[in-house]
Amino acid sequence: MSHNYATPLTPEKRLTRVLSRIPEDWSVNIDRQPDGNGGTCWRARLTLPGDDALDWTAPQGTMVEALETAWRQARALPGGEAGPQVTVKN
Image (cartoon, rainbow, N blue to C red; front, side, top):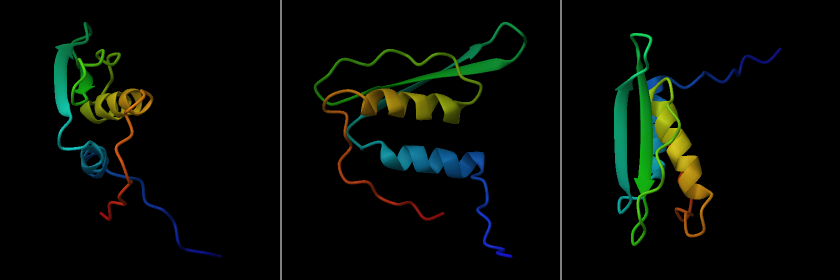
């Protein structure tokens, strides 16, 4: 039996991964708001060079989830390709 199990990414590694994928010339906005239940929710948006800021993401439970959602929104747009993908080794 194989013992080569993948370990889940920690929140810190997920944050490092998503930030490493966002090109340096893209602007990042992060917003923290109360969720109405005594907790916190997060929204994020990216701005591609020469474009207006994208819409805020729907509220997410963590900052990392909000950034990952904003990254997927930006990638779905024409011109949203970030170029060659780089593998991050954590």
